[in-house]
Length: 125
Image (tube, rainbow, N blue to C red; front, side, top):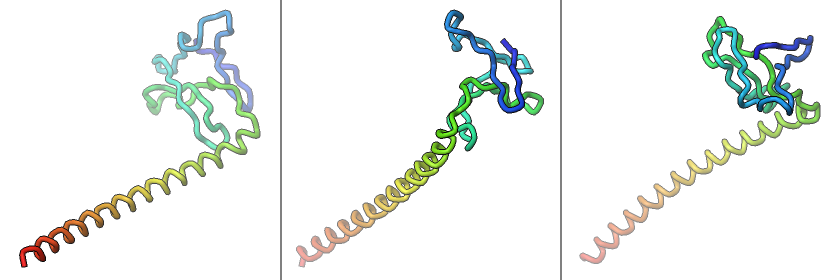
């Protein structure tokens, strides 16, 4: 199934209606003849929107074949990129705190080893 409906703003592949087969059984072909894969866009204009793409991403193939999902509503377009940036920042902070925690644990272990060694030396005296 390869028909594209084009407009100046949006490209949609014709997907089966409820009476037809499900989209998981629908074949969308790339211009190279391979079954297209479904990828997810994380651009600011299409956050989380799925699209069909060539599985090989060859230079002769189209990277974008058409949308799987309908257009994202304007409110989601305004909110989702900020939420994703916030989430990425939080993940970075968590990773930094985990690294600090690992370093502190190493320091504590070394100090405990030194303390134990000093205690052993004092007991021998």
